[in-house]
Length: 286
Ligand code: PDD
Image (cartoon, rainbow, N blue to C red; front, top):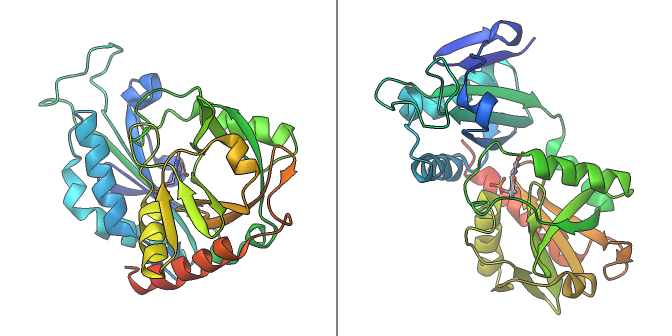
């Protein structure tokens, strides 16, 4: 049985408890991070911590008391759960003042809730999906306007994933005004004539930690990167596509709405970036 962390305690998962009045349960008033673990070490931990701090600030949410110990807590959970490859999920919520109210509870008297748990995924970096590539379905982007904040409001992305599965696809890319915003749980890229194109940062998309690293590595490798919106039609006519996230790293896209990209197999740019990302991020893993 897993050991999880709840508000200062390490507990068996069946003994962990949160109030039914917790703001995240009633109002999705919480933020989260997912950090991958490879070879027992955390990938891009500093980036995830920085983004967590930003998400909390943007929502005027108090930092949990254990904020400065988050690295130790991550490491302890990885250790006690014997995670070689997998993920650490972290969630901070606005907590509970024992009732339901749209008004935020007093931040002086209401402590945030902090929860962490691990997910074991042996062979996470050797995913067979990376050899096959993803089939993508395009869907409307019906999310709220602050997608840069990593909140636990994941109902629409979850529905998007189900729409994709129903259509025989692996994932969905969301479209706003004809342009791709991002994947249901990843950032989206196309490659045309050796140029890597991905939407620029704004409130429209999550500022992916993997995205930042991959773009840095791509530029260091003298690859051409253009940060701008691209249309779904442009994507369907691209040479290749891929997505990035903490759990998928760099994952090739081979088909959009039934239209094959290039020859319909993972492209060379996506393959190379996956290799570079895994090599380089392992070097700085903690
Ligand atoms: N999802 N865009 C969205 C909407 C996401 O949910 C995610 C991450 C990303 C990629 O961000 P990063 O590279 O920092 O993981 C982009 C996580 C993995 C999840 O919800 O499980």
